[in-house]
Image 1 (tube, helix red, strand yellow):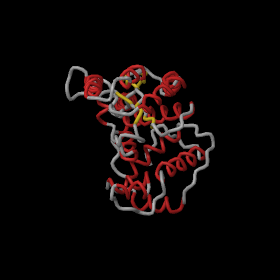
Image 2 (image 1 turned 90 degrees about the vertical axis):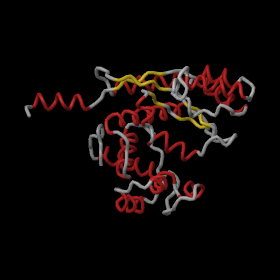
Image 3 (image 1 turned 180 degrees about the vertical axis):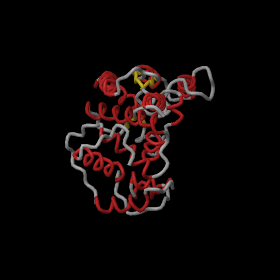
Image 4 (image 1 turned 135 degrees about the vertical axis):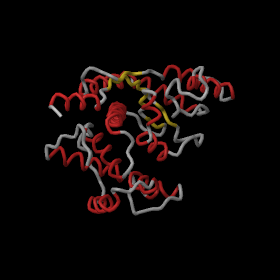
Length: 273
């Protein structure tokens, strides 16, 4: 194949994306002002599905439509903090880094997930799905950075969380769904390489993490993947097998890999271990 033909094929295989903010907080504030009854739930479904029942018109599946008053308080806190304006700034920065003639526009919507009251979600399983099982969102050109009702919000959290989900979505457009542990770690290493965590310390037993990863990198077992990223305590709640993993082990391990590869000068733009 001639060089020009090779680069033509490469260009077609690498989908360039541009992210745009799809504001939602005003609509969700109005929703949560409604009484906690069937009418509110129906109003939520209308926002979610639009006129096409069973589809997704707005990417708000992370919200608990029957959330209590503290959810409304958290939405107002997000608005006061200027969350969507901060997200817009983060989107602009990421678009600049990924700049090229855009071929695919992806709308970005903040999802406030209720992990405090109402028993709406198991935080770890929802978090896993929001990071590793996002094919339905990708197909609909959506990206949904997750913020938790239990979190103490800061501007840095909103900016970094947004960037993490943007780069994760971009990685998906290039590599598709991760299958093995190796794939999952490669994705999160790429994401971590793009975020400025401002030198926050990472605390894991690195040798044990490396050994576990080396022995299981080809595994596609969901419970093992889940345990590596979220730890034994999260696994025990779901009666999954445990392997001696600490909380968020896989994410911290991925940050170690990203940091080490930065030091080595490795290009992580399309990193696959």
